[in-house]
Image (cartoon, rainbow, N blue to C red; front, side, top):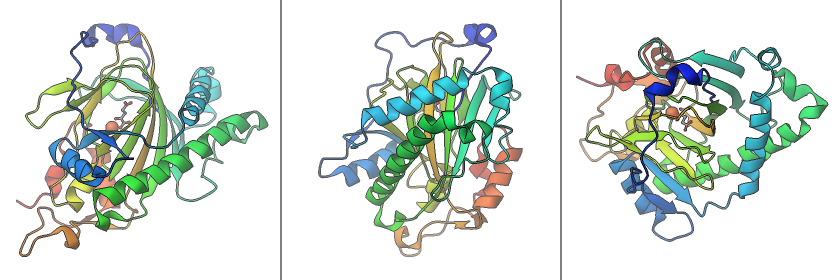
Length: 304
Ligand SMILES: O=C(O)CCC(=O)C(=O)O
Ligand SMILES: [Fe+2]
């Protein structure tokens, strides 16, 4: 979860979209309808982004975790820091703007490799009083994990993979800068605070209308490579208006650390060449840490 603080000094940088300025072209995939697989593939090609409705995940489950997250982020700073730093998982906050990106985020990062989920290192989750947080977290992660496999299967039979997962709770008042997500897919649920924008293929930015009952799915850089560029990872950013926190829960499905990220042979036409040189997820993450948020990180792995 990402939280943005210091709203006052950044307020002038962001503007709420005017009524009617929301983009109404975000593809909406109804998971209960036949033909959703083809619609997902088209959305991944055209936008690298879509919204999922009729997903079968009860709204209560999202609302419960949101409530617990807000409770945590409202704790005094010293209390929160007892669950950090996020090495690799835990509480963190950082200014993400040293390279010109707007924003400061506060988050809780969880690893989701197996059950029980690896959150035992976080001080507050060990407290008996955190039992409602633990159960909200477990229920939400189990549900969203199932949704991730369902969506990956619909994208392509060949994507029946068990991704390595991470999960982040975040809360932000000012938003943060443009980037693509490095993983395979990200499944985002936010409260009803506006702010998410995506870049269309022509480079223009559009505002995504908030919808706290639905999930938004991003194609990540790894999936762009696995489909040899057919699916495009979507550039996105958050411009919150500084008035109301945007609380997000993001599930990232990524490749295992040592796995080579390369186009899936089943998806390649005869004679089709990979657009990328081979690299592992570990290498990619290292490159991502060294780069700036808005950099085209995949560029250095493209075959010239
Ligand atoms: O908070 C959001 O809506 C988006 C967050 C995001 O893009 C990310 O954490 O990668
Ligand atoms: Fe993102």
